[in-house]
Each structure stands twice: as structure tokens, then as C-alpha cells.
Image (cartoon, rainbow, N blue to C red; front, top):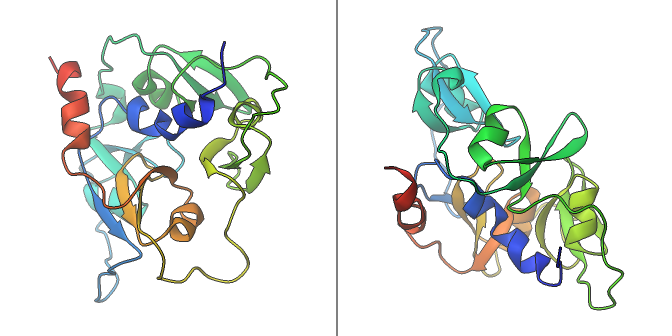
Length: 223
């Protein structure tokens, strides 16, 4: 398997892997909602949402899903979600092990978080041209890896090329805004790369997110 361009592939792994997510765009680090905290009721009206760990979880109601940072996929329990038949192999991690799944939906439904929209690498080429990346592991710890391939083998999801930039000090609001794929699979706009990294979001491109990107991409999978 050729990983010479894996860094470029990984940046789109999250975007391309979520075959059945709803088109959405959010503003992070730019505007914050004001007002008292929201308290969810105990009403049981289940929804299936992709959690911040990148797996499908059934929540008691829409409010509790949103409070947990989940991206709602469908009404009802996750057991009722029907995955598309598309064969688009992804590499996902569950219980400390990487494995190949037919598509992202199947992986997430089985509790595996997608790392790469491709087969899992078994070994990495010792290429001098490999680019260092910043990635986050399943425990939420960010670290630098010699290449995207090594990050995936270690069970980490690539956030962006280069060194990790978040330090002990909080991120500021200045800088260039970026569009990144949040941990819950939503295409999200951040005020700068530092805020995106601190949210464990995978960089997609610099500048404003483009509305309708997911809708165009998913049109062929909805029958």
C-alpha cells in the first residue's frame, strides 16, 4: 500500500468516511451562545448520534445528545440504523485494536472510531520524505508522529500536518480561521488552528467551511 500521500488522504478521512451524516456547519471560537445552562428532561424519545469519540450512541432524547456533543444521525435507537451497502473500506479502532470495516457506518455502529478511509496499514515505509503529523489517540492524548502511517498504526487519528501547537496556555481568538472535521464528524469552522486542535478536530482546509459540501458528497449514497 502506498502511503506517500497518506497525509493528504487522512485530512479527508473523516470527511469522506461519514457516509450517512447530516450536512452541518458550526462556528467554534468565533461566537458563543449566551444564557443559562440547558437542563434536559428525563423524557425517553431516543435518538442515535455520533459521539465525540466517533462512535454511534443511543441517547435518551435529542437534548441529552446535544448536551454530550453528539451529532444526531437518526431518530430512534442506533440498532435501527441501516448502514448503506457501499463498499468503501475504512480503518477503525475498537478495544485497542485496528481493523478494516466495509464502510464507516458499519464501523461506528460496532463501536469502532474511524482513523483512515482506506485499509489499515500493516507497516510504514521508512521514507525520508515522510511528513510529521499531530494526532490524537483513543484516550484523547495528542502527540507527534513521524508520519500519518505511524499515527494510524498506533491507533491515533491525524489532526494536521506538522507539530502539535496547543500548549499549556489557552488558545487565543486571533489567527486564520480553518475548517475541520470535529470529533463527532461535523464539518466545523474554528477561529484558528489552535482551537481546532484543542477540540481534536481534523484539519480539512484553511478558510471558511463551504456549505453543502456533505450534501453534494452524500447524494449518491441515499438511494
